[in-house]
Image (cartoon, rainbow, N blue to C red):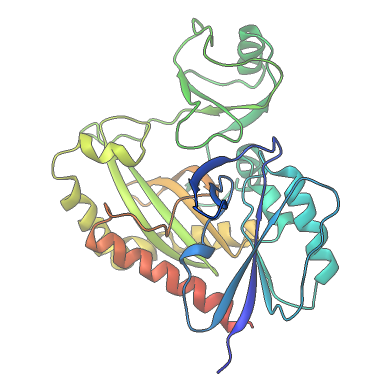
Length: 327
């Protein structure tokens, strides 16, 4: 059977800045695609060929659509890629109904942190902490917003568009002066802090991945600290055993209990593929940290455990199946 052709769209950020990763001998280079779902490099398969186009920030751009059977928009951050998401939205409108189009820009634009808070209220057993967007020019602007929005300390403060804790600060009282932050009117988020530690003081963050409405677990990380990232695994003795226990039991013990909430999230988001970073407590209540399509999910990492690699393979197969089924 002849392979079909799938076009994957990436985009340059609004500030027109990318991070150079590798320079090849022939003069071409590889750049890191922040603000991207970053799945196309890893979807080798027998059903379709992958073609990639990068949208720039110019108003006009020629796009070859000859013999393309589906389109997947990988541009995933509405805080940093508004221009190229606008181009992707116009492109979708121009071909609507002709070929399947995954992760439309219209729905990606819904995934700002403040909009996720507004969008996902009133879902049983789901808590999305209050989040507002502000444009402070001084410390007093931040504290005025905290008072106006009726936040309680502690509060999480972060720059819009940053991920991985790069610009994240927990405000515990009104003495913080924010010296490390450029308060020049750019967008920041305030989020109500939720203490999600268990009775032993351990914090657990789950990364769930939704593909075509189906939920998969990517990993679970334990830490002594509330701000959890990949390196947090080093802080807990026997972390691998604890994580493996969750990965093994997720489909049987956890997935059925959160199915209803995940279905409602999926229906409201309107996305074909996205991730949820969250905490799930013993009563299967979900506390959402973030929801978007920018998460590191299926990249090859030598540090991945055997079980993590199995879970990643499930996600890859689900993506290939979703795309391949409709072309």
